[in-house]
Amino acid sequence: MEGKVTILVIDDERLLRKSLKKILEKAGFYVETALDYQSAKARVKEQNFDLLLVDIILPKVNGLQLIEKLQGEIEGFSSSVIFFTGEPNLESSVKALRLGALEYLEKPVPRKNLISAIRNVLKKRNYQIKNAPSVKKTLDLDEDFFEEDQEEEISDLMAKTQNQLQEIYQALAELKEKYGDSFNEDQRRLLNVIAKNNNEMRKIWND
Image 1 (cartoon, one colour):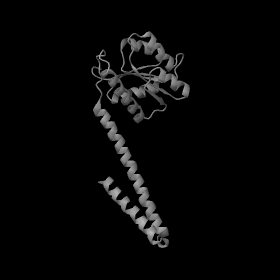
Image 2 (image 1 turned 45 degrees about the vertical axis):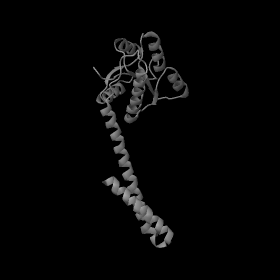
Image 3 (image 1 turned 60 degrees about the vertical axis):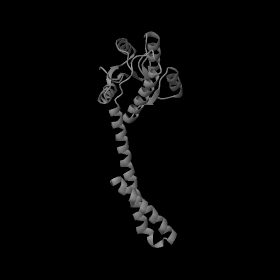
């Protein structure tokens, strides 16, 4: 745990807690879980987490009430908060902002969106810490992981672009085969320009 960003996942769905814990630990974070207010309070008393990832819909005490109670009952509570919910609405999003939440996510949360939200919150937290001299702890952010995540996004973008270029190529070939004899000179010229640029782009991506 030493040197790692600490995250507490609060959700009453066991499988989701387990899944989020696995994803975040793979990302290099130290993760604990809680299923309701009582278990969350016990964890927070033992550990001042850098970030709380909280489901809004919880039994007895919902996620919004949970954070409000922790803020009032736990001395020195300073964890950043991300709320997520399967039933987003304006009322809960406004309440989340009032409680100081930096992100409000809708379930199911894609892995990339979750990691991106966590990254943004941690960067904001570090900025706040650097501008608050009384706070000693700064976060040791896993920049290698963030770079890896960005590389994965770029790889996906490249794959999608290649597919789109291939679709353009096939559409041009079909146009030429079906209607090539009926095109006038200007139409042929414009199609040739499109085809030429498409081929150059495909070559760049393939290289």
